[in-house]
Amino acid sequence: MDLIERVRAKETRAIARALTLVENGDGAFLNALDAEYARLPQPARIGITGPPGSGKSTLTSALIGVLRKQAKRVGVVAVDPSSPFSGGALLGDRLRMSAHTLDEGVFVRSMASRGSFGGLAIGCEDACDVLALAVFDPVIVETVGVGQSEVDIARLADTTVVVLTPGAGDSVQALKAGIMEIADVVAINKADRDGAERLEEDIKEAQELRNAPWRAPIVRTVATENRGASELLAAIENHRVYLASNKLLNGVRAQRAEARLMDLAAAGLIEALRRGPAFQAAREAVQRGELSPRAAVNKLLNTTRF
Ligand SMILES: Nc1nc2c(ncn2[C@@H]2O[C@H](COP(=O)(O)OP(=O)(O)O)[C@@H](O)[C@H]2O)c(=O)[nH]1
Ligand SMILES: [Mg+2]
Image (cartoon, rainbow, N blue to C red; front, side, top):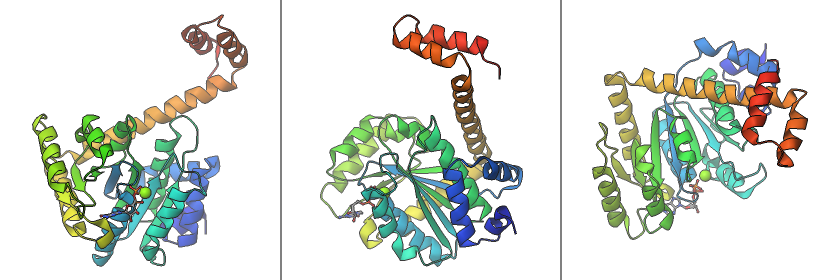
């Protein structure tokens, strides 16, 4: 049986193999996966984002616990550009979610950046396709949200949960950086610590400044004790109902497909320019300061055969 069929048959080893091929950018497998694209199941996509250490992985694990009680098959992609494959954070993810690792209804994969332009989002989408093919629903995407990348993160999911923690400067900064723009649900994790009240007020204040049709509900959680996990899941499901009942879900997915198209187009274009015969000369001219980067690109676009 070929790998695609084995993934569709929910075979754990095949899923792991497929994710590795996707991560390595294996052309033959990606083509086979792309051939399934129009027929892929469309699992609910939940994004969990927030500053490093805010408890995203622990919270994801708590959500998995609730979802497993509902007999849902849960797929998780944890994306962390800062952590290499052998790195601590990654190991942390594995350990933290290890309560579920012997459960066939759960698949957790950590992935680092492929390193190429747009590689992170592209690799994540490909991994999500594999999990969709393996009939996981929902698929949870955990991403470190810091600074500009938050906008990218928002488009990886139907529903984005922003995780903030009391007493952390990071969270205040996140609020200032406009994180409310992307939050469909806010989790105040580590609510066992002082300052949850204060943070909730700050979040509400930030929300007042916006006039959005959907106001992100705020849920307090203590992920280490599984507290608030059911409430968080209920808030996520409410947002999904809101999307569905206002016919917004297709729009969210269409936006995601378009963003993916643009990412791949940009990556493909750069690859094509790099492979072209004039690239090295243009690069050296730019490095010597003889040619402006813009002029170099224009020249390359005009002379490269695609
Ligand atoms: N006190 C407390 N600690 C927590 C809570 N949730 C997570 N942690 C701890 O915070 C640390 C970072 O958690 P982790 O899930 O790896 O954060 P991530 O980097 O956002 O994925 C770990 O030591 C967790 O045990 C919580 O609700 N309360
Ligand atoms: Mg984590």
